[in-house]
Length: 433
Image (cartoon, rainbow, N blue to C red):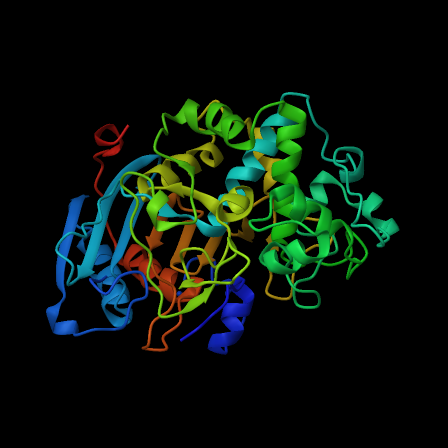
C-alpha cells in the first residue's frame, strides 16, 4: 500500500475518524519484515517487558499490552508519575524480531508532543524579558511571499500568542498543511529537495489566511514552525540548543534530541518505526518509493512542531515544569500557558492553551496532547489529581483497522488509575537521571 507523507488529520480521514479526539474528561466516570510491516504471524511474536513498576500498578502493564497486541504494535513505552514521583517506567516489545527490545529510556519520535516543548521555550524567553506575547510575527520574521504572490495583509495581526494557541488563521481543513508540501514548495520556489525550514516559511507566507487571526481555532503545524524560527531569532541560538540549555538541562534531561528522517541516521537507543504504507521520498526529485516513516516527510524540518526524540521517562520529567517543581518557569508563566484563549471554550468544553489542550474541572485542570506521524503514536495526560503519564508507540496504522486516537490510548489508563485505592510512594527518577 502507498501512502504519501500525510498530516495527522489527513491520516484520520483515511481511517474515517475525526482529527484530534479530545477525551480528557474530568477524569474518565515489530518485526523482522523491516520498516514496512505486514501483520505477520501473531503466534511468532513474544513479549518483552523491561523496567520497573511500583507495587499495585500491574493494571497499567495489562492495558498497554492489550493496546499493542490488538494492533500488533512492535514497541512501546509508558511512564507514570504521581505527585512528582516516577512510579512506573516501562518498555514493551511485542515482536518476532529478537533484536528489538524497548527500554524505559528508548527514544521515540514525539510527534506533536513537541509543541509543548516549543511553547515552554517561548515562555522562557517571555519570562526573561526577551520577547512579548503581543509582538506581531511580522516584526520578528521575514514573511516575504514567493515571487509573484502577495502576502495576506492580515499577517500583521498574528501575534506570538495567537501562534501558540493555533489562532493564526491557517486552516489545514481548507488549505493543505504547508509543512507536508515539500515537493510543491520545491517546485514553487525553484529549489531542490530537500527543502529547508526557510523554504517552508517563505511558501507559507504566500498563502491566504483562511480565518481572521484570533477569530477561530485551527490546528497549525506551520504556526509552530514559525515559533521555532522566532526562538532562533530572539535567542541568537539554534532552536535545539536553546531548548536543551533552557528547558531540558535544568531537569537533567540529556537524552532528548532532534530526530532524523532516514533510518540510517537514527539516534543511539532510538526505536525503529513501522507502517503498512509507503510514500514518495521528499529527499530526491525522482520521488523514490520509501517506507512511509523513513523519508516520506522531513523530520529535521519538524523539530519545533513535531520532530523531537525523547523517552517516556524524559517526557514525564519535562511535565514537572507545569507542576511548579522546577526552575524553568514561574507560576505566573505556567498560568499564562494554561489561560483561556480569546475564542473561549470550544463546543466540547475545553480549549487550547500554549502547547496543551486544557479542561477546567472541579479541583484543577486536566491537560493533555497527542502526537502522530507515520510510524508514531504518542500521548501525554496530566490529571488534576497529580497523576501524569506519557505513552509512546512506534506505529500508527496496521491492517486491523483499529484506530490510534487519544481516546483509544488514554481511556484504559484512566480506568486503571481510577480503580487504584492506594499508590506506591517510591520514586524511580533517580534510576534514570
